[in-house]
Picture 1 (tube, rainbow over the protein chains, first blue to last red):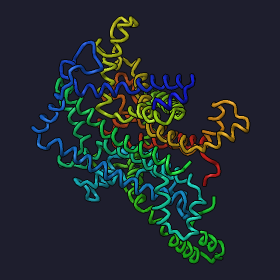
Picture 2 (cartoon, rainbow over the protein chains, first blue to last red):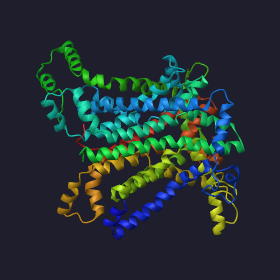
Picture 3 (cartoon, rainbow over the protein chains, first blue to last red):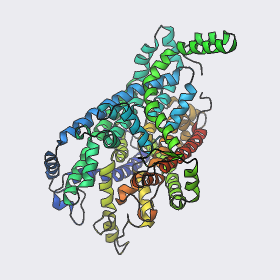
Picture 4 (cartoon, helix red, strand yellow):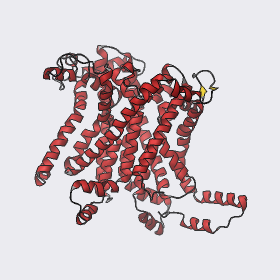
Length: 285
Length: 326
């Protein structure tokens, strides 16, 4: 890392790095605060003047969180398990479904194509919150209440992911697919062997956004789940911070804040690396 | 653009003569059958799309024409909801529309331009350290809900312990602690700042990806053709080469700006902000749907929101859309 900087040592580059570092620190500061807050003992949480970095790190906040939940009916780990299962399954399903749809919409020609594209474009601006009641009627009409499917299916139709895939697959040259066709490749083969490997950057982006949306979603648990054991971590967090006032809230809240942030961060790091690697090796320009 | 598959089908289509409706229908069905693989690939998406997006939206449009409290059966009242909205709903005309416009105009294009600038700057860095910077800029958009509230309420806290008050007091810029979040004067600005902070989201990622797909040979070709500085390079080569990503992130920026609404209640801890200072259209919908239980009117509001965003969308297509696209 240092070597490459020295090799490209120019005044403009150094000033650029400096400028971006300042911006980066400013953007990252609240997150550092979040991390430190989670490990602050109570007296530091209420310290004046407030300090960003923790002095005597402690796991007290996490203890509070687990103590509080072990007293409840449903253990904290159950929510965590639900969230993990739902977020991972949904992300995987959305990627498959959207890549398939994106491929067809980009490279095939058939009736209703313009119509479907138009609908997707409008649906990009779709806010699930505004149509909560009709959605609830459909979910309960399909008999999906209190099942994992009710958490997963509403996210399956992701106009954003399909749009992203379609736009990305548009950039794959037609001549490549035609050449494969001439060599006798079927649509299935083209999809599996050409489209999927070449779309990895778009897949990475779609995975990151889908995971975040699903992981943060509260609506599914609030509306479609009546059993406490089927609800997710995000719901638990919201219920928790709304219901517990005072000192306990600050200590539990700070540990939960970190817990909610970490999986997102991990997924992002995982996929961002993959995205960049595939960009380097796949030869797509 | 030439169709990749079904070339033979297209040929047979043009050679089939028209023979009345029956033959036309038959031909149509045959063509649909020939395209069955395409439909099969689309099926999973389309099914869930219809179930969870199209039908709910249609129902919402129908509900917007009714008076519905969530319990009794909806009563049809025609367009009175819309008439009421534009003639008698004082809060809507006086606060919601100006606030939403102001907020969306600053946050939408502002966030968009910022994400492009930062993505481009990061792209100039050596590859080995690029990741760290993109992580730092993307991180805020991963912080949602509780965590966001915690960090920013601590910053803008109204007593002298709040970070901002503390800093400004010690610098001598203010004499008494300001109630940042309760004062209607500041709330909007703070909402905009916080949203901008989280706006380096998906659009930013898409642009980063897009910058990497730009063919580097084009830059050399451009230099030969007389491009002098990097500004010209950006304008003539970079932006045209990554139009799909530019369009995508434009759409995401618009959506983000229009959807925002929970930010005001997250910051102030109240569903209705002081003197409606941070009242956006989504707060208005929430107010009517979940506080007053006027689902019909709330649906009418969301229909208006949908129409407005559709109009803005058309505009961004007009600006960024590729003309030869089918």
